[in-house]
Image (cartoon, rainbow, N blue to C red; front, side):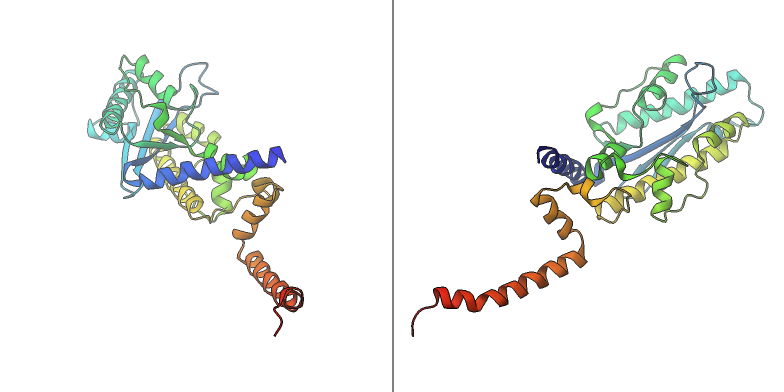
Length: 275
């Protein structure tokens, strides 16, 4: 009973965080980025190739990428030296951190951007390596959406294989994954200097995260976790299951009506007043 009660408390925390984000929708951003593979770069901090940010309320998108910056600077991004890469990447990160500082009071919603391999810290480290001074986004304004999903649906909301939880969840919910590259394909695209493809992949994943957030808020997200795992076996958990399933709610309402109608004569005989 303790475990299932804790499960409902955890779910309530996740739902409350989601409600908070939506109550501040005009001050919430979704962020995602692409980078060099952190598996095959021989221990170096992965180079950042593209960062995309979407305003949750307006869906307007801001992009920072090496391929765009190369065009701004009239450079051929198919023939860049390491020095060219450093110059372009530093400008990309400089613009990103200027944007971040201008939006420091916003909520930053992300997908697993939480460590030095892939995340805010990894981006910060790259900028430091390029002699930049990163602006630090407050940790209490960073919202890792997979952690919110775990609180709402448990960690069983989706499987890792074959394409990672983000793309698997998108496919399960019929969300368009066109242009979204898998992790190994992103690494290959970087090696092949296909920066436009990486940028398109980042934008598509931003779309996917946006759709997942919206469907979660509307209680329309399809997950593979079982109801018993999501709600537990407590009476409140069973009530939650019924409330979130219109068929069960209809059956429950009919049963209550039948029981009420059947018991009415009994109550009248037991407690009815004499005429």
